[in-house]
Image (cartoon, rainbow, N blue to C red; front, side, top):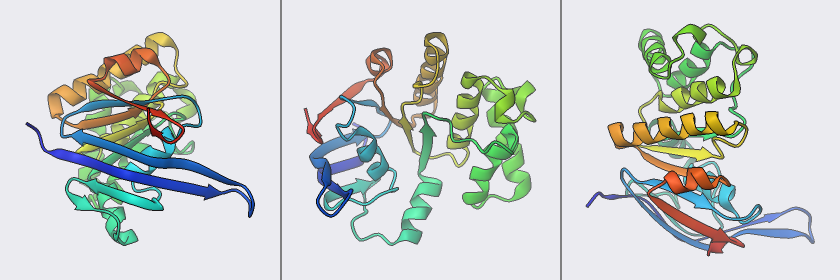
Length: 225
């Protein structure tokens, strides 16, 4: 059996919108993901899915509970330690692609390698190889506004893979794509999962995406449903 790579125990998070208005985004969520899993997080809007994903990516910190990433307790982690884990163990894919408009596809992907500490020549070569593997050889020097939504998402996926992370976190990766393009993207994710044994955790409203996953975590009102 594969090792546990993500372990969440009674994670809680409350956001203060104003002095008198608070939102309990997570109310004690539990989750366990093993290496090589392909897991969906599903639930109604506002149930805490994206908040949980941000916690898993160390982009935010919980108020209570425990989170382990690849056996590392993150509760007392300093920011530079969290940065190292984000840079080397975790790749992010977002609904809105989050590409920098002024940079080409190649430059967007290379930027992740810079954060990961790669030298220029190494990151240029790897970024070119990743973009070619995504079928984007003819789009390497194109900027985001010169590409379709599916092409932009494949650039974003190449960027997420740049530092060869063991975990890929995807927040509604097909949310802005048509059904055919969505299917292409999810098939690409599944292929990566099978060939590289990379662990995927995907927040989605799309039933086709959820049904393609090996495991599904259902959420409601910040808890396990």
